[in-house]
Image (cartoon, rainbow, N blue to C red; front, side, top):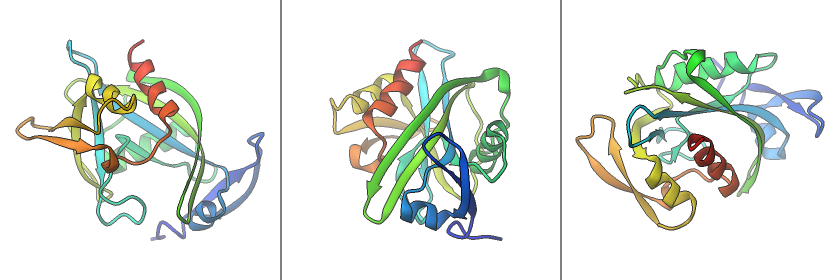
Amino acid sequence: MLTESEEKLSFYDEELNEIGVASRSEIHANGLLHKVVHCWIVDESSNEKWIYLQQRSYKKKDFPGLYDISAAGHVDIGEKIENALKREVKEEIGIEINFRNLRFVGSIREKLSLNNFLNNEICEVYLYNVKDPKFNIGSEVEKMVKLSVSEFKKLVLGRYDYIMAFSIDEKLKFNIRAHEFCVHKKEYLKSIIDFIGK
């Protein structure tokens, strides 16, 4: 089994023409443009809308223990976007995607430079609406938490340094501080909030 750094990925030019293949570690060391899928799990079945985040495993090389998108991952060489999305969601949080409940947010460019980590991605972003989701988390995920969309919006808009989250069974209530979230551009997160509001 390949380690994350040995995993091979396609990379692209600015017109999204595939121009080569490199290891995941080379992709991030050199800031090569590549494709990923992002799936935000939401529950819009009640008056209070909920969004679900994963806490990344403490064993992950990148951003261990931080809270992030419900499920996300790289698109394998030659893989269709829908197949990558289905695979990543199943691997990370154990949910079988029903494509009727999936909404395409858009293709969003994220370019971030953090220490020796250069993230240059085309993110194929989706919302997956499911009532009371049942998670079966994989080894890449520490746990799942839920928070109200209104709380998430406070954090995204910079109004609070922390927000309230709940365990999936709602038995635990706790605060997550801003620095405990993976870094994403504010415009990207705002587009998620706006899309949920549609």
